[in-house]
Length: 251
Image (tube, rainbow, N blue to C red; front, side):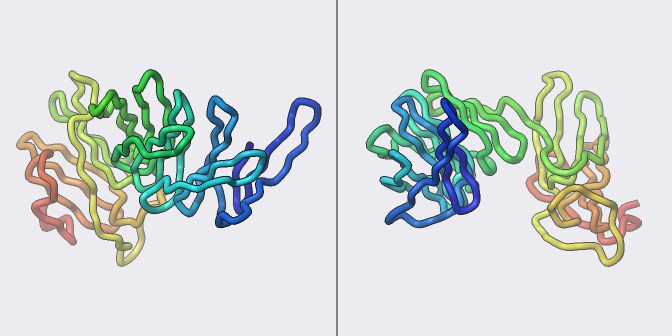
């Protein structure tokens, strides 16, 4: 089974490379982002319209809301459950075969991958995080930058700060070898008055960092690609204490 723009394809590969299109019938035509089979051979696909489609013999036989908003970005069918992840950052767990919702779990960004075993769930997110969920407990076991290039690096004792084109500044604890905290560069979407450094990121210049300083007094200073400098009084502050249009104001 393969999914794509405005279609679902079912393949016969035992004797020959033969494919047949899925039949949407009474259910809305859409592009399909992901697909999966359960242990009984029933097929499911995640639509760009936020619906999960159930398929039998190439025929759509039902749809279910799989994402609060945006498209369904990940599917996994295992142990009598279907796990549907969405662009909205939510995983919805359906009980099979009746497709009743057993629970929903909220994460930090778009869901990119899901795996499960004995009720435990591993979830990979678009922002570079991987979460382990056991019962109602949710633990971030992996953190990283995720878009463009890492431009900023600053060390202060056992703390290291990195900044990137992904609108994240991450503080790492080198003793524990893990992320200790993080801040976003900016909520604003703006471009510089003139010129900017090159980037591979899709984000606006105001959300791409070019350098970072982690000062001994706990201050965090970040220069963005739109020419502004953001100053946090501490690495635990949720917002900068000042934003400077001209870095000479701070120097």
